[in-house]
Structures are given as C-alpha cells and as structure tokens.
Length: 134
Image (cartoon, rainbow, N blue to C red; front, side):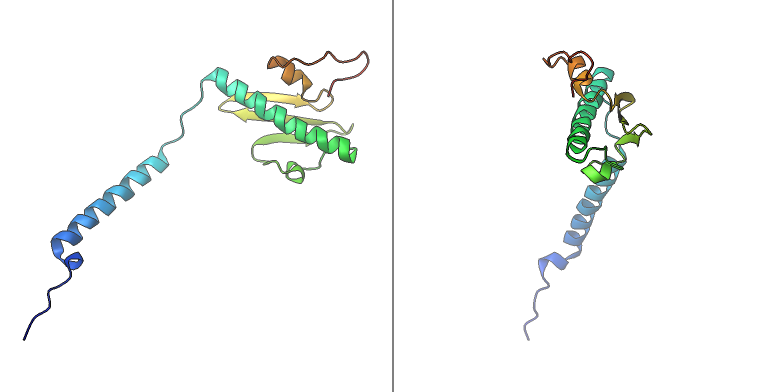
C-alpha cells in the first residue's frame, strides 16, 4: 500500500507562514485606512478652493444661460452637494462656497466666476460699464 503525500500547501509550517503574512497585510491596510490624508498648506488649500469654486460656478452659469435660472440643487448639474454650500437667493441669483482644508471661497452668482478668475491671475477683459463679465 502506497500512502499519498499530503499537498505542501496543507502542511502546518506553510499554513502558519501564509497566515502570518496575511495578517500582516491586513494589519497594514487597516492602519493605513485610519490615517487621515495630509492637510494642504494654507496657500494651496486657498488656491484649490478657488479653482474648485470657479469650475462649479462656470457649470452653474452654463445652466443659467441654458435654462434662465440657477439649478435648484447642485445634483441637477452633476456637482456633489457635499463638496459645496449652495443656495438660490430670492432674487434668482445664487451663492456658492467651496471649502478645502479650512480655506473657504465664496462666489456670488451676480458676479459669476470672473472675479475669482481675475484673482487667480487669468487675463480677462474688464467688465463693461453697467454689466458683469460672466
């Protein structure tokens, strides 16, 4: 009678080694997931909030041009409502705020993104007398 050898993966030393490696990888991943992402330096946080607000304001302005009114919610234009503070004012304009790592940038819908773009150094023409440059 010939006895079959047990497969090498089921041998106790191999099982113990694989289990230790598996637990080490799981422990590392759990430790990494609990670590908060590093905060941006204040000037980068401000610039990131400003750029994010400009992009969101441009999306909202596009909706205003297309529909004649600001969207009721940011979801209506595909923006994440958890990333911004947004409200439509009684006069039909809107307010938008973007926050990144403690830096906050506000956009008044009557002015649009042009003011923020100028503050970022974008070369834009000055608004015509009596109107805004959206």
